[in-house]
Length: 232
Ligand code: SF4
Ligand code: F3S
Ligand code: FES
Image (tube, rainbow, N blue to C red):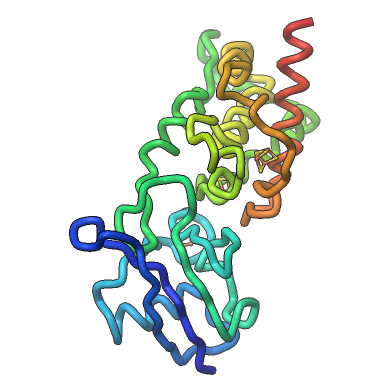
């Protein structure tokens, strides 16, 4: 089938402002939006810039606004969005070129929450045991692929890019509720700061945007509750 692609393009070195450019691509309804982008770049316009790597919803590199909604291009079927497909970069971070944004700030927010296991006890000879019940407490948030779809769909973040954002809170959640970790209190203090979890106004865009179906808003609520119980 023939689809019309309207793509927001921007080259900071040469363009004064972003502008839409139109293309057509002959693709199957069961192809992905990424296939349509590849058809354009490989056969029509090699200057079109976008990120992708795994092409299977694992690496998180091809989040973009597809018909005004954050999605992964490699997980969105043509039949879900055809025949008119508008593609724009995710919002809130500087555009490097076309559909590619600079995620430096996103990964700074991620690093700020200490997204790694902290345990000062002597290394066990076998493994650090954990019950299935304890593992279940953070199972959902282990699924994050750091695609930034949640953070860049949040109106609070659009208005204030200092807000740590749902993705970083999800990454913190994964360790705060891990029974083997010993830095939960430190992470909760970070998320209790001015630009932390309390900025969230439970708008739920993040949950709708997550390609891994993580209950993002619930994870943020878990963190808020943990902060409160730490304070009591
Ligand atoms: Fe992407 Fe979901 Fe992780 Fe947010 S929580 S970065 S939307 S995978
Ligand atoms: Fe934003 Fe999600 Fe909270 S959209 S306001 S982080 S529920
Ligand atoms: Fe890896 Fe889409 S290319 S998630």
